Structure formats: C-alpha cells, structure tokens
Image (tube, rainbow over all chains, first blue to last red; front, side, top):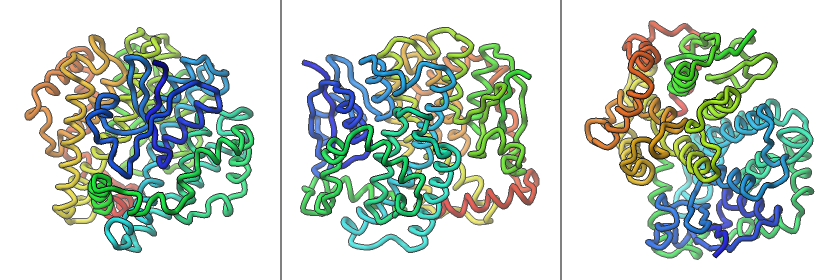
Length: 242
Length: 242
C-alpha cells in the first residue's frame, strides 16, 4: 500500500499536486474523488480527510490535506531537487511568502470569479450581478499586476532561474481563471513568457493530460452532476453570491 | 542595523509575529505602520514591502511579508526550539496543513466578520445586511467545529503536547473574532481550554501588551483615521459588502 493521492482534476489545487507528483516521477495510486457527484462527502473519504476536501494524501497511516502542504511534504519526503523548495533560508522564505500571498490573494479571487461566472449560472440559473463581477475582475487584475511586478519581475520563474513549487501552484490556478474568459496571458506578455517556461519544464504532454477535463466545457454542466453534487454545489454558489 | 519588524498591532497577523518574536527573545526594532493613517501606502514602506501589507520584515537587505512565512523564517533563522516548527516530516506536514487550512478558511471569515461588524458601520454609517452577517456566522461556526473536532481533538495544543507556530497564528485570529460577538470561548469549553494553554505558555503580560491597542474601542473609530486611512478603508469595506 503505497502513496495514494485523492484528486479531482477539475480542481486546480488537485492539478498542481498531480502535475508535481508526475513530473517528479513520484509513484502514487490515483484515487478519483468526483466533486460533481459530491464524493468528497462520502463516509469513506471522510476517513481519509475529515475536512472533506481535496486534494488529500494517504501514505500508510499518515493522511493530510491542503495542496501547498502536500507539495512541501512530497518535496521533502522524496528528496526532490533543491530548486523545488530550496533549503536556503532566504530563498525558502521568499517562496513561502509567495505561496501564502497566492492563497490569500489570488486563489480566492480565481475561485470567486469562476463560481460567479460558471457555477452560479449553471446551478442557480442566473448570472451574478454585474457590479460584483466587475469588482472581482478589477481586484483580480490588481493582483495580477502585483504578481508581474513584485513577484515575477521578468524572471524566468517566480524564485529566479529555476522552477519551484510556487510556479506549479500558481500556473494551475491562473489557467483555471482563463476558463472564464480572463485573457490574462494574451494581455500580459511577461506572464505568457513565464507560462511557457513552466510548461516547457513540465512538458505539454503532462500539462494536457492534467487539464483535459477542465478544458472540456461539459465538465461543469449539470449533466456531469448528480443530486448530491447539485446539493453541495448549489449551497456553495449561494454562499459565494451572498 | 538589525532585524526590523514593520507592524501595526491593530492587525492580528502583526500581533502573531510580535508575540512570537518577543516570546522567543528575538531582538528586533519595532517599526510602526499605522493602517488607520494609510502609512502602508507610503513610498518608504513600499521599499520594505511593495505588496504594501503588514506584517513585513527587513533584515539587512532581505525583506519579506506574509505572517506565516515570517514565523517560519524566524523559527529557522534563530534556531528556535524544535516544537515551534518540528523538523520531523509528518509533524511539520500536519502543522503546514493546519496553517494553510487556517488562512484559507478561518482567517477570511474573521476578516469579513470584523469588517462587516466594526468597519462598515464606522465608515459607511450603516450596518451590513443581516443575512450577510448570518451567513458569515454560520460559516464561522462550521469552521470552529472543524477546528475543535479535527485539529484540536482535545489536545493541549494543535500539534499535540507542545505549542507551535500553529497555535500562535490561530490564537490571535480567534481572539480577534471573539471580540465581534463570535462567542467561541464561552460556547466551546475545549477551545477555551486550549486558549488558556496558549495564554499560560506565552504569558498574559506579553499577550496584554500585544492586544492593548486592539482592545481600546477608540482604535477603530474615525478619530483614529486620517483622510488617507479613511480612503483605503472605505474602498475596502465597500468591496467586502458586495
């Protein structure tokens, strides 16, 4: 019984973990947890992660969740190349700073944007108020400005010359944002260049494999959901719209 | 020119860093950044942290932000006792998991609750809609259930028998939330017991010192703000009310 990763590739944090594990040839058993069918709410999955969220990891008796924490665990456990999460105090601190900034600032905006534009119409049969959408887009744009000017600063990767966990995490979330019509890469050549660097390093085959379901429009339609899925998703959409 | 910590003790993440540094006898220069006066928008502070948020750290030429990242940097740099952020892979992973869960789930709710209940009335002279407040209260309650049942599980501290960075981060945010009517300590004896453990360990003298400004009702009143402060604060509260 080796490493198990509980994932749904429709979720960008899951894609980050998937891509990271695969690109580093970490052997694992892929355990599908279909969010559209509310599988994360099952009793079985509750034993893996009582928080009922994915991605989740099971390694013998050891279980954990939270994509950022999982990436750091894998980097350490499998003694991956230093550049992924450098041991150097200051380099590591700057990567930690980025990871925290990203989950505090960028990810919530990406999530909100996605739910307002894709999930709310699908589940509630109505579009979110224009001023809400406008506000989220403006904030997101400001966050991307900071990403470009403060973190990326024209470097090859976020931490400098070499790829790290920061790039994998960030790219997966930013690509999710493009699914709602945010033309972030077309409008921002420096970010596009960074994206190409990350995709080159990881390889398009793996990137495409991870993103296949996301790019399929039907993945987020009601046809993909069952009643359990509809229930929890609708509750969440209402909350996000409140 | 030693370590500088750029803080406003009105901000819970700043209190976290302050308490952590002081408790561990880490020598630093306290650099006041008054959020109510928009000090963080100054050109000078922009050189310390271009993201313009507190807490921020300056250590010679090295600068960084993000409270969680700062705690980890300090723990490593000053070679603090292992229990603060254990070197053991699995212990560290579980603390990372908690830290990420906390910033993803608990902190945004604490922030929203505070801004809706304290800042909105102060700045916009109107109360936030009842249903909005209700929604936040419900979510917060669910998060506290998870904190108690999944993370704390009756242990003295989050990671077990010894205090860690997880407790300091969580403590400051939860105490902030308790001030706006989230009666978690009265209603949840296990969380109250944990709070007592943390306060005993850190010492009430330091806790009170850190919290003095936040406990003074006048600290959040318009009298404490200057026009720059009012400007950014009002913009932020409008965004949160959307």
